[in-house]
Structures are given as structure tokens and as C-alpha cells.
Image (cartoon, rainbow, N blue to C red; front, side, top):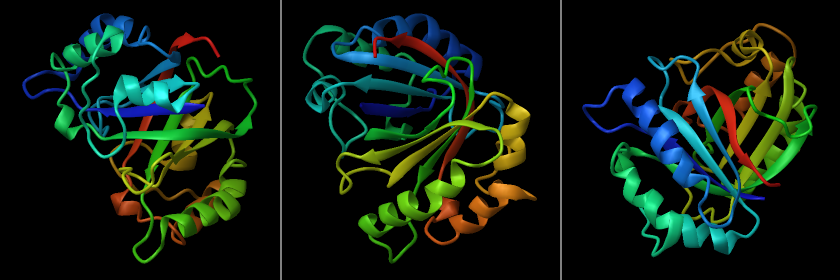
Length: 238
């Protein structure tokens, strides 16, 4: 499936709590009814004071054209739908989001491991927004990530679901990909991948340590935003 991932940043002068209240209670009922949306999930930070963003919104579509019609294409953080719930949602964005500071990503999800049969509601999730190392092409990056790193990462202790998201338009995408690792226990997530407040981490053992060491072979880790949060599935017609 294709999905639009928005890394949300609240407007200046708004508290995180005010942002969450508007997002969850005013915006979400509109967004989940956007034409073509098959699944919609929101992710709230486990540690808002140290998180890089105020939340993540993820909208899934069966058809890429439906996604583009509703939410625009890569190359711009803004978009201008002409009608329906997509237009209503875009107008509401101005009530709580700093859209110019809100990165976004459009990609195709590949499920690499799934021990929960797709039921991610209430799970803890580490989303890494990947940036390739200087001197590496996007194709070289994807080849290494999918062929070398993914077999290690999906075996990290505590991971119950692992998905990678590849950009549909790499030349205009803000990132080279997204890695999403789900845990049932937030402490296991922190043990494996660190907590908020730093883009780096230093696991002591096992596959987590092996994965962290391998990161140095293909990622520009200082340029790679990440987000740790708890996921709520707001709609699922898949």
C-alpha cells in the first residue's frame, strides 16, 4: 500500500497539549474520512519534551493517484486539494500545524516482519527517517538497506513488527526511506534503540548492537530524524 507520513510540528504559541487536543478531536475526524483513505493512524510521542516532533500522522491509500489527489505529491510540504474532505482537512491544518516545518514522505510500505497480524493499535513504534551517507546513490542505499541491514534489524530483541517504506519519487522525497520497528514493551524499545533526545544510541548486546554498528555503513545518522511514540489506529478498512 501507499502511505503519506506527516511529521507534525505545532504552531508557535501552542502547547503540545493544546496541539494534541485539536489534532485528535478536531482534525482526526476529518482526516480519516478523506476520499481514498483505507487506513489512518496517529502516533503520539512517549516523551513529548524530548521528541523531535509533536506527532506523526499516517494515511494509507490503495492507489497512488488517490493519495496525490488528496495530499499532493513530493517536492513541496504544502498541497491544495480542490474538494471534499481533503480540502476540509487542508483548511483545518492552518489551525494547529506549522506546515513549513512539517516534513512529509510518500512511499510504498514493505512489511518485513509481522507477529501481530497487522494489529498495531497500542504498540510502541520507533520511526527512523533515513538519510543516506554522502557519496552514496539512492539506489546503492536501498540495495544495502534492504539486502544487508533489514535482515539484522528485524531480528532485534522485542521487535514484533518491522516495515520499511520506500519513496515513490526518490528525487523529490525528503528522505531516502523510513524504517518502522514496533514493540509491545516501551522499555524493550528503549533498550534496543535508545530513548528520545538524541538521534544516536548505543545498545550493549545482541542484534540491536549489530544493527547499530551496521548503520555506519550506509546512514548519515546525525541527519536522520527519529520519533518514538505509541500508535493509535483511527481507521482500518484494509
